[in-house]
Length: 114
Length: 113
Image 1 (spheres, rainbow over the protein chains, first blue to last red):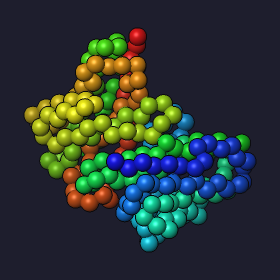
Image 2 (spheres, rainbow over the protein chains, first blue to last red; image 1 turned 60 degrees about the vertical axis):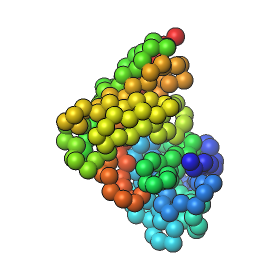
Image 3 (cartoon, each protein chain N blue to C red; image 1 turned 90 degrees about the vertical axis):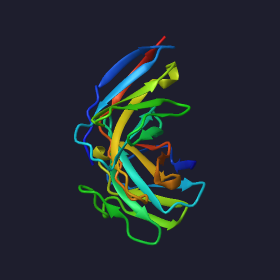
């Protein structure tokens, strides 16, 4: 299994500012995934991050708004830039488990933008 | 990946079996059925998956119909801690880790005392 931690666990931010969310995994993983969960909604994939290459973004998400770093095989960051109240969500980090058969998810970062 | 249909909510009495249905009538032969759950304020948790045969692990059982167009997740003795949103997902059974895991709205299971 993989144990994932995220920092911060929650934050309240002002409109127009940026927040960087950290994701740390206790084992080396090739791919990391970032999801967004808006209030009362299901999870939506933002992007897939490979170590050593540019992240791949899903439709509706762009690098300027959600830049991602993946400096090594156990760590990634997601930045939510120029925030607006519509960015208020839970942001979750996920990694692939053994044999490509399951995903593990972090506890999430609850972001409120005022 | 095939779409899934789940009831939006279900109730279950504590100690009884919870049977959560899922329809995936457009599933392809190379697609797995996966179940995850999300307890309030936590990240999703893997429960079980299967391709054709019924599967059982320490958490639950998965019953897949012979035509694979529907499945049922069974929690044999539901507890209050099983109250969560349960997601039924189908994904292509390709090798590697770069597959999309697409979450629908899921079923909110409420276990009552």
